[in-house]
Length: 477
Image (cartoon, rainbow, N blue to C red; front, side):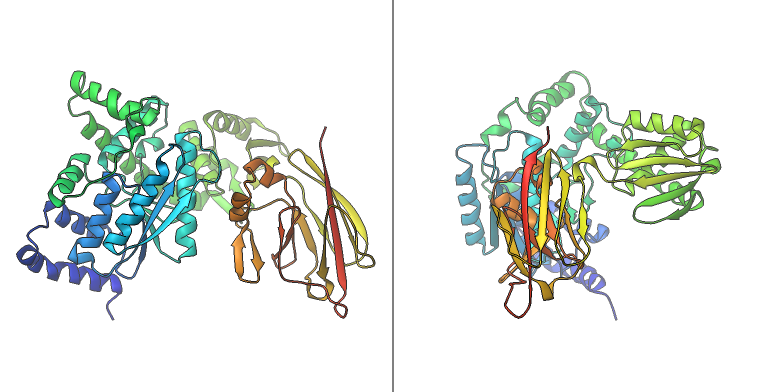
């Protein structure tokens, strides 16, 4: 039986003559966009798409291509708009996008920053957090953003000026984890403007786009135009081509690295990797640096240039049994003819302790700059500013008192909720989040975040026994 993807490809091809005859308003960008989606197999007709829409021209063109082109009829599309709150009138943009969504008959989800954003990077992080949380909560498959070829050129130039390595010249990726797609990346801003003009699309104008106090705006509005006028008329195309060359270079290295790593890695699990030291050192320093960075990225650790140099010296000259930290949560250990990459707890993560069995006890732990004292009892109800009582019979021991992990959820009577969202709603800073203890049971269920929230499960009763806990804190000196 043909796959859904194959059926969709056939559907696209069979529609082309019909479209050309009966939809004369469709233009060259429609056909090229259709072909690009088909060739790259970016998404299927059964996928749910969350389209990031700011109200600007780029995102409206992407939305228009997906919603009004008959080839994409029936797609499950949802609009996602995030109000950064960095302009006094930004809430009006959200109202405008919501009105557009109603006029076009598309569901719209609006998010708002719940704390002051002070930079482009803060805004970008908050926007992607909102989009990913929305995609996850609605069970959609992809987040689509409207980055285009001119954005690619600006990104490559920006990274060159900041001294990026070869890998950084890749620029903006067409797709990245966890579920981001950028289907307009091959198309220029001029093409999008021409499409908008032909289709009568009226976009919002963000006045901050002309503020050269933002690095991106300075590149877009001043530096890159001056380069094209006075140095290299085809600078944008050259920068995009440089990105393509870097991507080809990276892809070639990736294929070679797969074979090298397969021979080099003696064993590996989620917390450590054992390497053949002799084989590793048989490569020159430049190749070793690339291999080491690639291996560390498998643990989500990005090595700096200085850390890489230090690690190479350590690999060649250290004695067996020596250890060095090469990143926030990564250590390199020499063990005779082997090298061990070991993932260690980050300083930010702090300590943890387990309550192995019910009873009476007390323990301390340190999270960030805070020292916490936890008491528990099955005999009396403890009294403190922060205390809770749970149903003893329903708890799965050992319990663990630790810091917050980004994937943690807590269950209420109406369903589960991410702790990250609870922290955001209560305006708890990132630093405080990692200083706040979380109590979980043996199967990973969150019981309590002292001073923040507790689960609605495990309510103590007369016949089920009780387990009482209290927590107090002080700041480390």
